Amino acid sequence: MNEQQPIIVWFRQDLRLTDNAALHHACQTDAPIIFVFIHDPELAQKWTMGAAKQWWLHHSLASLAGNLKHYRTDLILRRGATLEVLENLINETNAQGLYFSRHYEPYQAGLENKINAHFKDILTIKRFKNNLLVEPETVLNKSNEPFKVFTPFYKAAMATLQVADPLPAPNEIDAYTATIASDDLDAWQLLPDETLWGAEFKKNWVPGEQGAQINLDAFTMHALNKYNILRNRPEFIGTSRISPHLHFGEISPRQIWNDVIHSDKGSEPGNESYLKELMWREFSYYLLHYWPDLPDQSFKDSFADFPWQNDSELLNAWQHGKTGYPIVDAGMRELLQTGWMHNRVRMVVASFLIKHLLIDWRHGEAWFWDTLVDADLANNSASWQWVAGCGADAAPYFRIFNPQLQGEKFDPDGIYVKQWLPELQHLPNKFIHAPWGAPAPVLQEAGVELGKDYPQPIVEHHFARERALAAFETIKINPNASA
Ligand SMILES: Cc1cc2nc3c(=O)[nH]c(=O)nc-3n(C[C@H](O)[C@H](O)[C@H](O)COP(=O)(O)OP(=O)(O)OC[C@H]3O[C@@H](n4cnc5c(N)ncnc54)[C@H](O)[C@@H]3O)c2cc1C
Image (cartoon, rainbow, N blue to C red; front, side):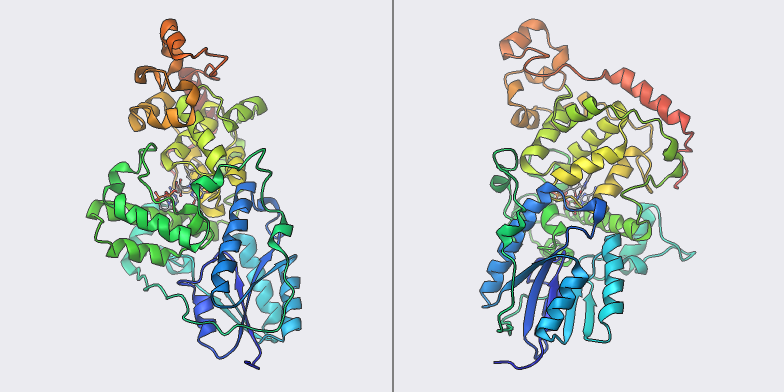
């Protein structure tokens, strides 16, 4: 038995054994290791974990605990205020070290400072860079300030980017053998009442490291080489569906980057396009690091006076996929059933909420936060602000998607719409993105009574477009201003 004082490896957004620098370096010492995950629901305050992500967390922790069992060690679960939980654990075990991965959400960064101040004289604290390719401090413009626009950020980041090889999972782990109290995962009650919602999640996802690698392997094998073409087509599995795994750190961006560049199935345009999307994630984290208000405040101040209408009935129709615009409704129903939505459709539904319904982007952000299994503070807030036109490097405010044309362009055969809106499955393709335009006999033959089986549009597109443009005029945005 190893008599040394143990090292605590504190799992956070890095629920993996492969390419986990905190774990790897702890294993390089002679000390026995204790693994802990802390559920601290109060920490994030307003941004406490949404329901879909709680489902994921439950299964991801179960998977991690199962993987640790192969090394004959346990995952200790504790619930409560992080600082207090760590203090108790350190006192109980007389630990000599605390190893963890850097976390980039604003309240987590604050917590890291507190931990350092509180424990630095008691034990060795080591924080590892584990979840980004580009640490925010390493990329600044010529005036030593953070970039606000993606392209110059991307160019500067790529100029110096060095992606290390992923670290292997440990061969063996010297586990701490004394008994330590742990919560029962089920007692955390993270799972939803499946009779109400969430029953389909398990058909779509395998949370945990193995599930992440399966998704990535399938993607590199079958879709990477055409990613630049198929990434906008929601009816195909043309993207990697890695986002929830990446969010929870079940796979590292280093691993993904390396797998992609070393894949013999890729293509230059496919790889380039995919790696660029990973860099958009880096940019979101970068923005959140420098502008911690990103989830709560429009980046462009002028939006503070935007005349939102925030009609709760319209919001409800949008949330439940009942707007009468098939591509919007299909996306919102995919989200409710699977906890995920294709990126192209996320852009369309977000634009519809903000511009067609004049509902504040923060309502959409909050709904996504609760219902996405990949809800990510950085990516979600940066993306909503991008669509709204109020973000750092945002889509121009006057770009108002026409949902019918978006559907016709990106789901030309209506396959995606029919998958999520079975009530429209007999409608001919010609009308699948605009059922309101179908002649009465066509609707009758398809078994669709508008207003009964499927809604009439809740707002007319041309009216909505003009209204949105007029609303944007009132805040007098200079479309060329970056912030
Ligand atoms: C309104 C809106 C809200 C969004 N909310 C989230 C969110 O909460 N969490 C989240 O991870 N992504 C979010 N995105 C970005 C994007 O839609 C998802 O990352 C992507 O759909 C995930 O699917 P995938 O893993 O198959 O992506 P792939 O196309 O396979 O891309 C691989 C990875 O690159 C990153 N990525 C891809 N596109 C983007 C993007 N536009 N911005 C930033 N990173 C990107 C993601 O980490 C993604 O997993 C949002 C986009 C919009 C328009």
